[in-house]
Image (cartoon, rainbow, N blue to C red; front, side, top):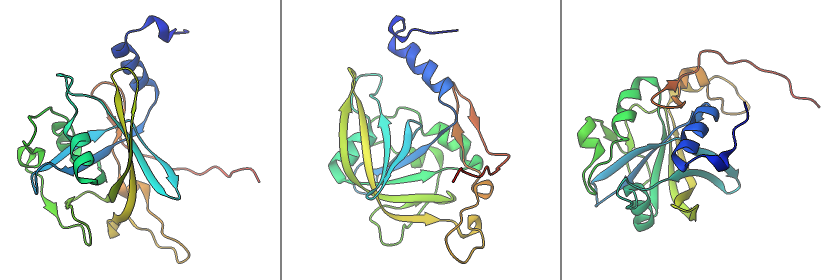
Length: 203
């Protein structure tokens, strides 16, 4: 079956892309809405894009009203954000934080999540998340007709739960199955890892 994207509406293209580009990692992004009133939202158009500088990129659409989403607004105002890699036990809370709330209303309070200090960084992190990146804003690029906001975040610090770190003397090893990260599929579906295998790369 060949599908011509020129025949599809943007919403149809979105559903096609999210069901075919799978699995996708989820950026669970915490920002400061108003000096301690924190916003938390998930984004699955998300990837690392550079290691020097160390950059993450995620794409943020608009609210159903056409307004800029709180994550974009907060990042532009404060220049600070924490990107979490959530795991399976937090799937329900990740989904709940995708709800559109009025600006200034916190997803933290709505979900009952607990925050803890992120040592040496202005913003806290979500307790229980195995991985979190403390970031500063690198760039926001608007793209498309809507448009989408591509947010480039430069990593300053990384938190890794000691329980997911493997034993190796020469470098840090993060054990993927212990992280048990959530990944996004189409619709309301998530996936988790149940197998990790290696294939030797050609020399």
